[in-house]
Length: 189
Image (cartoon, rainbow, N blue to C red; front, top):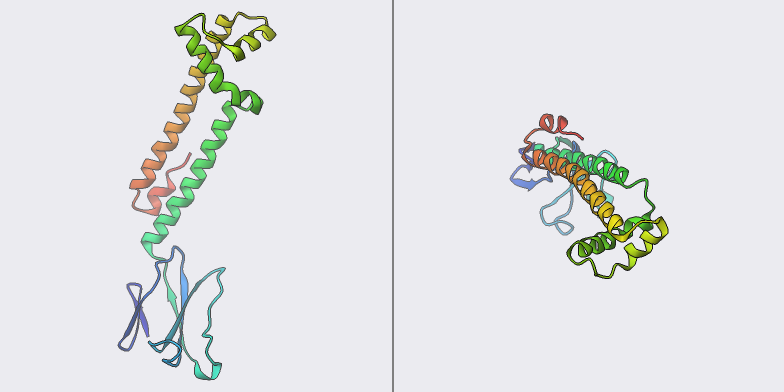
């Protein structure tokens, strides 16, 4: 009984084994062919998982042994990329949230409408601006002055958010082309 290139071989019998991102253990039992046509029950487990045992009568199952299954390099690489991308996304979310942390969520939800009205006002000074007009009165500003401020803040926010989003996308691109875990280890927020 042996494992070569993620294939278990027992005499003439072979079975492709899963490509795990962590090292595991392969446990093999000889069982009746009525239970499993190949005559072998193969369990693959890893740290934190439960090892399976044959469900046939224990008197009919013969334990053949355990072999170590190394982590598959491709699966290990993909797991490392996925983990690193998750941490990059969390850092990106944190920085994006910091851009708007001084504003209440209700005000943030009004930003698209404010920008829409401000842009419409620059095209037609007589256009209706129900939200901006109400805000301007409450603040003691003209609607035109408020519209200018809204557009300036929207542009500044877009630029700052664009830099953060662009950084995240560049890091994701670097992860996509990384071919080793060492390369992944130097890609971080």
